[in-house]
Amino acid sequence: MSNQRTASVHLGANRVATSLTDCVSDHLRKILTSVSTKAISRKEYVEHLRATIVATDSLGLLQSAIEPVLKDKKTLDTFQHIVISEHALLGPLEDMLTKKTMFPKAKRRVQNIGHAFSDRDIRIHLAIAPQAECFTSLLADEDFLTAPITGATPVHSWANLVTRIRDACPRAEVTVWNFEKPDEIMPSFFSSLLGIENDLLDRRTRHDISTKACQHLKNAKLLTKIVQIEDELQTRMDVQYELDLSAIASMPNVSLARS
Image (tube, rainbow, N blue to C red; front, side, top):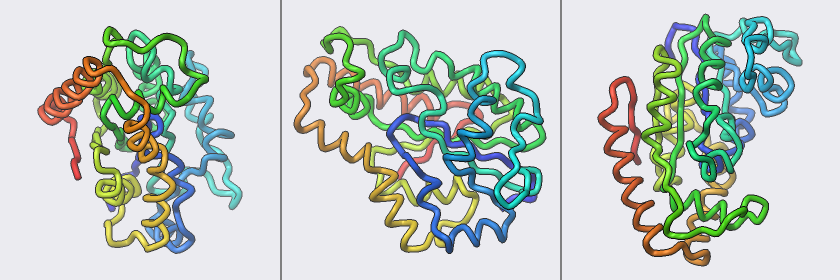
């Protein structure tokens, strides 16, 4: 664990790795406390941080706005390391797949993170999966199905999103995680997000991150056998994912982690 004050932020993508802070066992929480690390709960994020991260004006960027008083009466300044995990931080699912640009609000939200934690080193973590699997998750959700899905449907680029994230906060350390094999990559992803060694993840935590945090993605993988995408669209999505991985791997100031 670095001696520098840090803010590690898992900001997406939607339904790839979810509810991670709920998977922190009591045993692991004690380990995190011993190294001065605070994993922000979903409740704490919603009550104290979300308004600042999603702000569209300068009012949301006040440093004082992100120093919540926690239930043990300690502010975030008390901790050397802060961990935030919000898989929909960049926007809702429809912003990922149905807009002209993937996550059109990404630049501003990442800038907000940079301003809000201007006194800390920032580590950004983005978990991605093949576009076809993400699209299948959308197709299975009737609330988001607003137009017919055909071979002419545009295929968005993860590499383009990563470039915008990197450029929005140049001082951040950006890591992109390839979740094609979620069970294999998840322990390394979670331990890196928390800033601890992989072998410190106890059995309960490993079980929970596999069965709970990856459930949406695993369901999407199963749905690909039921919900059919046109062959031409499937091919374009598969090709785009491989192109994205290649482009991300060669990006300056970005790391690509594979299982």
